[in-house]
Structures are given as structure tokens and as C-alpha cells.
Image (tube, rainbow, N blue to C red):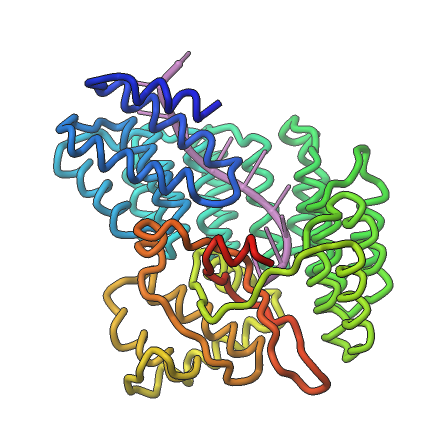
Length: 431
DNA sequence: CTAGGGTTAG
């Protein structure tokens, strides 16, 4: 129904502040359930039009704007919004604070998120949840648990989301005991009945830690039907820990729920590849072909996004995590600049030199490329687009899809992981 | 109700 709202909005000759806020927050609300970022991008366009119309934004406007910036990883405009609040003496109320905490955390600036959190007045549950989640995606489980404890001292009641993000923090730090304890006591201690999401997090917690049998039991004991997230989590864990049998079980259930999602087949394919079962990799391809599942087209454009940033930074249990940090250090010691069509290794130095000032681009690009480098274990030529987000706003024909490049490996091609490819929508359609 | 937080993986 958003298009109807927009149609009506477009009929209004001189929208006032409340009208602008209504349409902007309608976009913000819809963008949470919208997988591509088109609605967030549209929010930026709308805000731009509002500026042109000389309507002065208030806190509610900025909450919608910051939310869109957080979704897109648009660092500059998000910090502009923050500065606008400070410059114009707008209140850093709990709504604005929560939006900013989430924004900064997703952009890799945990310190700024913390700063906003400390300065926010009359913090409530959502504010604390955003801060705990911020620590969690940065892999700082200690920080997450500290804020969780602080909630109690400050007399702020945890809710179901609080427990979910705390469990998430435990899962990504390998804190099985703490995570399980929280899950087991949530009903008695906090009066919150575990929902599907909590079970999903529990399965993930156990699976990442290599406790695959327990993860399987957790699924069996669920009082509700497991969803795709649960199975995908088990599949990912089976792959990392090399349990083919369980991986196949997970995939079977996953495909029943999501027969059209090519990424599921890629996960299984990667699992076979990781134990050198190249024949089976080929079989997965054939199954995909039989079922008419389209794989995403390859492209030489690689992004860079917040997702990879969170993935690597936050996930201490990931087998490549240490390797990547070592690579990064090695790269940091070298210096030189190269052209943009150089190999990944060379391009990295280019970014190193030029992007130092921009924390978001600097960190997340470095990590994404380092990950791609390790995942591919070769020097695939990859072209880096600077300021991807700007590109997407100015050229909406570009469309982000998960990075599934075929990379040369011993014994054949592997579906490489490690980024999001940007290619034109036409290309997506044509495959 | 013109406002904010959430699990998988890439």
C-alpha cells in the first residue's frame, strides 16, 4: 500500500512538516521488510525534496533519515543528520538516540554509538537493545553483557529482543555456556517465552561452537515448526565443521521451505568443496539446473558492504577470522598505489592510501576484499567501485546481489564467497 | 497514532 500513500502524497501541493514526516516514516517502516534497499534510497530522495521545499526537519524527520542511512551504510549523510541535531539544538531523545546508535554501530563506528548512548536522556529498552546489538555485531560480547547488566541496575526491563541480541552476542563470541543459560532462564527470570527467533539463535550458538548434535536436538525439541533461518544456520554450521550428513539433512528441509533460493544450493556446494568432493559440487549444479534455480551471474564489480564488515568483525568463531586479520596486518605494512583494474591485492593498497579519512569505507572495504582474497585463494581481477552507495543512488540500474563468483581452485571451480556483487538489473533478468 | 531495537549467510 506504500505506492498508494505515495500517490496521494504526490497530489499534495505544499506538504507541511507533519505530512513530510508521515510519508518519510511510512518508507522507513516498509523498508524493514523490504530486501533490496530501494525504499531507503527513495527516503534519501524524498528528504532531498523536502530540503528543496525549505521545510525544516524535526526529530521525527531525522529518525526516518538516519534509519535509511543505517540501512544503506550512507555514512556522510547520517553524520550530517547527527550534526544537524546538535547545531539546531534538537533533542537527543530516545528515538533519535536509538536510530543513531544503530546507525553508527552498523557503520563500524562503535565509539560514536557508545558516545550517543551515554548522552541520551531517559533511555528505554529499545535504546539499550540498540547498544547491546551494536556491541554484538562488533564481536564485543563483554561490552554487550555489561550493558545488559546495566539495564538491570538502571531499572529498564529487558524484552524478547534484548534477550535475542544478547544471545546473538554470545553466539558470535563462542560463549556457549552464557548463551544457553540465558535461553534456559528467560522464561523464569524475565517472564519471556522463547520464540522462534530465540530457538534460531540457540541453534546458531550451538552450531557455531561445533556442537552439531546438540543443535540438531534443539531443533527437534522446538515447540514450533523450524523456519528457513534455523535450517540455514544448521547448514552453515555443518559446513564450517565438515559434517556432510547433517548438512544434507538441513538442506533437504531448507529446500522444502525455500525451493527457489539459489543461495541454499551454493551453501551445500561450498560444503562439498570444502572437503574436496568436487563430483558432488557438480551434482549440486545439476540439481539446480533440473529444478530451474537460477544462479546469480558473475560480475567483476565487488562491494564492500556493512554486512561483510559485521560478518568478519563480529564473528570470532569464523574459521577465517584470524587469517584475515593477519593478512590485513601484512597488507597494512606495505604501501603503494595501483590502478583500479589491478588485482585484488593491488587495489587494496589504493584504498588504503585514499580512504583513510572515511572510517566506514576504509574498514569495510578492506575487510571485504581481504575476505574475497582468502576465499578465492587466487588473484582474480576485481574492480573496486568507490562510494558504492553514491553509485546506487545516482544509478538505480545497479542492483546488489550476493557475491557468488566462480573462482579457479584445484580440481575445478568453486563458488567463492565474500562480498556483494553489483550488476545491472538487466543482467539479473537476462539470466 | 508523523519516530527508534531483532536470529541465518553472502
